[in-house]
Image 1 (cartoon, rainbow, N blue to C red):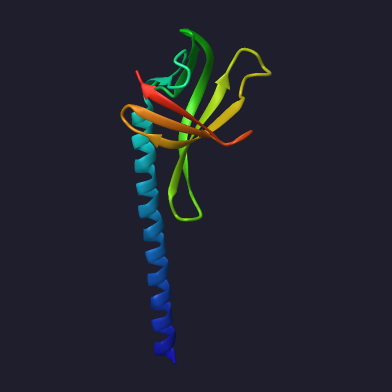
Image 2: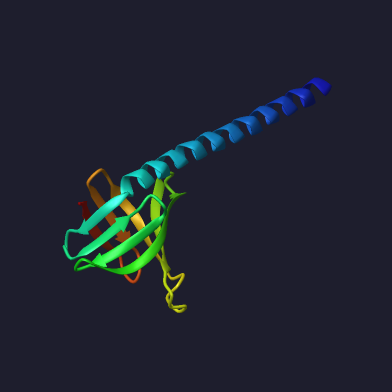
Length: 138
């Protein structure tokens, strides 16, 4: 009986250790994808449907939106991820408005990062309806 309990405890400990190792390795993998996208997004992106609309992402976490060459909004940005029901990692872009106007400061806009490469980016909007914005790096 004592042998059975010891064996059961060992199996339980191994199972917990395996689970912790699995979670830790996935967290490292997840942060690698997010880090890659943080590096790829740096630069100026022109909207393919409206060439007057540009978004410039800087290394310091700041982002500027331009329309007809003039800056229209300033944001801080972050890239994060979540795991879908099917087990895929989905990344998203969060823009937070920086403004001297208290009613506009802190306004959050979120996009799903549908694709992000060296020179092409597709952002997905979920509200008020699903829509896609296609960008080319300048």
